[in-house]
Image (cartoon, rainbow, N blue to C red; front, side, top):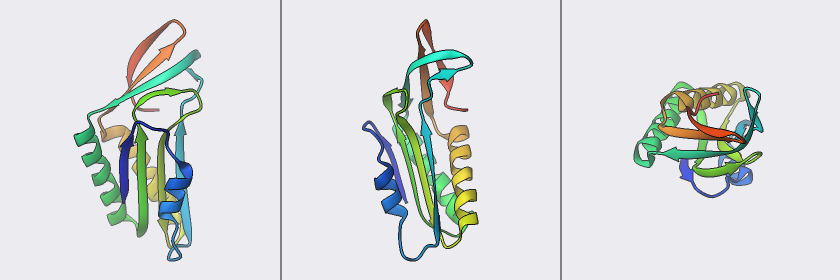
Length: 137
């Protein structure tokens, strides 16, 4: 498992390369990006903050639980912190396994559970103000 909170831009190729191995038949990658609007309001940027020790611990637990539930070979969970502009990648989850179904299910479990349990907070900055929100869809 490769679990990280990063202040630098996330690398899709780094995550994809990590889960690639000749032992697997498939991989699934989820990429969460900063969109340009929320509820009809134009987003300028997002600021992400995390309580790193707890966030990393919870992210590791999520990955371990996914590996227990599905026959996952390798898994990556990378999440950004700091200020992100529209279009930047906020989170990447990559999963590899012998068969595709396990990769889809484990990847969905990981992102859904991360949104529910991991102490990462998001501030949305708009043209006319800002608001702290839970990092949920």
